[in-house]
Image (tube, rainbow over the protein chains, first blue to last red):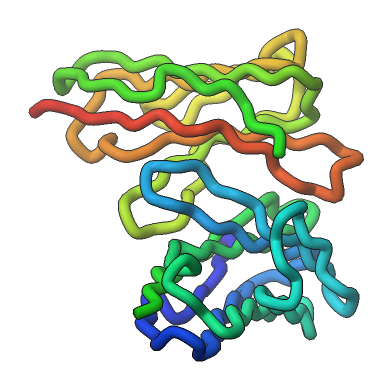
Amino acid sequence: GAVVSQHPSWVICKSGTSVKIECRSLDFQATTMFWYRQFPKQSLMLMATSNEGSKATYEQGVEKDKFLINHASLTLSTLTVTSAHPEDSSFYICSASHPGYGYTFGSGTRLTVV
Amino acid sequence: GQQLNQSPQSMFIQEGEDVSMNCTSSSIFNTWLWYKQDPGEGPVLLIALYKAGELTSNGRLTAQFGITRKDSFLNISASIPSDVGIYFCAGHNAGNNRKLIWGLGTSLAVNP
């Protein structure tokens, strides 16, 4: 079946530093990747949609300069949280999509900014 | 953004009982999906529905795509402790750049 690998599973960083999260589709080519943010006991909030080779489309209220998304290949997308602050602490989840494979989710990244 | 109305918000049941949860939308969907999320993990797909009226089973789970295309339900029969988790519905429209619209989740607790 379709597998999406997300790394790291958790990261602690100092305020002001940047953190990169990787999302890889292991056995299929993902034409579209989605990045979500999830706060405790809440649903998934879509941050942005990225298609391979083109700029990401950000949801309203999501700062594109703070959450940099790169989708350089059909199997890899990265989310970089720049100049992280404690309020950026959250659970970040990626999802890869390809016609015929539906939507497959990574296992998530717990980001804690101290 | 748009969210689906998912109910109930939480359930606490005895092992062996059946469970039912549902989602409604103000707009029509082409696809309904049901996911389960364990703590600290990403959602895992349980059942995907692609046609109005479709009834699909996956083991003890059964889900239906409503005739109006604006609702779906998920049933779990004979619940077991490992059914504990948060269940989310999600819907998709063909013309929405493949974005999923999510329900707020149903938290299920099973008492052994």
